[in-house]
Length: 182
Image (tube, rainbow, N blue to C red; front, side, top):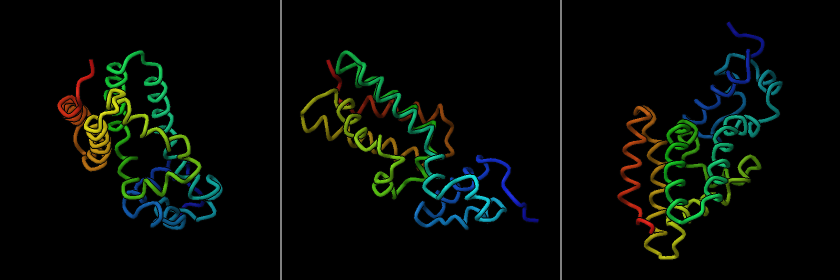
């Protein structure tokens, strides 16, 4: 039996998140989301202006947490502290929001062009800088970029591993891969 309207925004967001993870953002239509929720496309549009607004709703919390991490890194007083804050904070963030990361896989460069992602367009560069301990050495910056991308990719891939286990494994890898900063 089809309902007239979804009960909450969360129901639409959950359906959209599942659908985006299955078929990608571009491969998902508002009609697909409505069908998954059990309502009309008009009912979805009652709650969200368009598909971009749904994506924004899904990513509000992760982007807000990323903004907080960026501010904590900016407030550090030394390269070693910046590296520690960036590594611990990004691992925590990636583990907490790994389902959101998984749904963006493969489409992130295109999605960065959307207004919902405007803030985070320059955050990866600042994270690489912090992971590298503010070093200009190519080896430090390469390791930082590989580790940063690897964390995101790993969290998107291993959505069923318990948080504590994934966090521990990632932090151990980060500490082995990054050059220590004095």
